Length: 567
Image 1 (cartoon, rainbow, N blue to C red):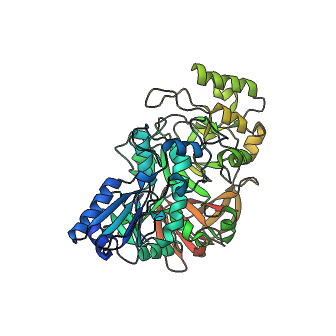
Image 2: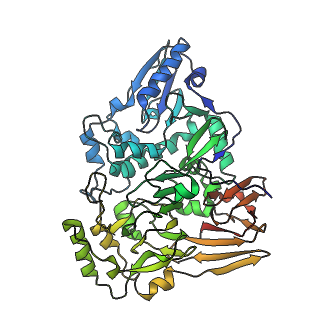
Image 3: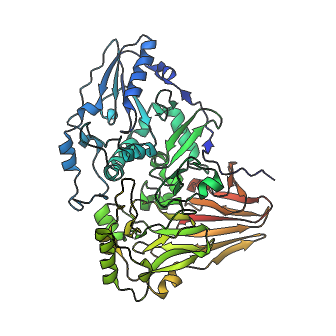
């Protein structure tokens, strides 16, 4: 029987080819007379990256002529004007997803003329827009940008110094969509991918090795690199149970698989490695990863996410809802909405989940009390309007858009949900303060515009707190559907295996995402020979192209794992 490892916070996938390190080796193929474009997001330390490239060229006695793309942005006021929203002109927290192109942020692209005795280095966001001989992409995972902006040290796309701090509103809804589309458009032409988490000595892949790694990943199960963030309500389960972020204040939000932010580590498990965005993989190989029918519906958007909400030793989440489908399209610009489910990894009959309205809830009174809480700081009893249910371990709660909900304190929720993740429209947040002592944002207007009064009374327990229904079973195993609604495009299943039992499965043209929710773990083997051991609480993506695979329980006790798929 295979040994079971513990939760791995930095899963790495081996590749054919080498991971390079440092600039001197990276510039080895450059020659005088070439234009080198070094593109990438705003958060990269461009001063260091540009300087070290020039130092490495100088070590080869090659002069460098630098052009900084950031000096060619349009005037900041012009950028603010053309990215302003007529739908949400004064909203402090939300904006529609930007449909702008990166070229729109520039007054004009610089005219770079190749120098016969030097390498012309064009660097910064949008460098690929300049005619070039070689294209590098200097990447930095999105979590760094969010840390910079939240700390007040980061700026937004096109924002010059001296114009104030950047905002997460622009970062999430304008900068990231624009930069992602630009990266996805050029990734097939990139000659070198630089991971600048260490800007002084970055790890890198040449273009052919990068694309070969993505071809391989599209045909095998993989884990994305998890991250955990701190919030005011956060608990300590991930620290105590998984050994993650022990130095942090808490581990409230665990991003296991959230496509817009998740990365995949490739390289040597004990050596140099590079983090590549999951979205880049999907952009290059959508049908292999998603499946033909899912790709036809969702394009290159990976539509399911897995994440943790850890309130064990923390506090209640806000009571909130997510947009209804039409509102999500019309106001926020997403083609599909934020349907969610809560799977209770940790809970109990003395813990609770807020879900749905009481049948006799007075919605006008609810609105008045919610408004007073925001404007006058008056607390109120949310349970007068919103039902609660025991947070029994392994229960799944379904949460269609428009349904008021929230996890109570003392729980660990595995959210198995649609990918949109930034649209929690709060009714009530317990008058909590942010780090500056201000009340955290509450979005009463958005929340009540999306509140679905049909999610009330006995219908909540009947429709949203479902009991398992067996789909199939065999020797020592059973597969149940534990959550399915006509209006939700995905469903959640759970498989239970006795010790050492095995079950055969197949993607049937649609990707699967699985997570071990009880027991030591599982070993998954594909017909092509790929094998992956998955421990408790780890999440694995199985691309549609994998086809048939077998799962075997590890350890001496029964194992349960959940599986999500697009219906």
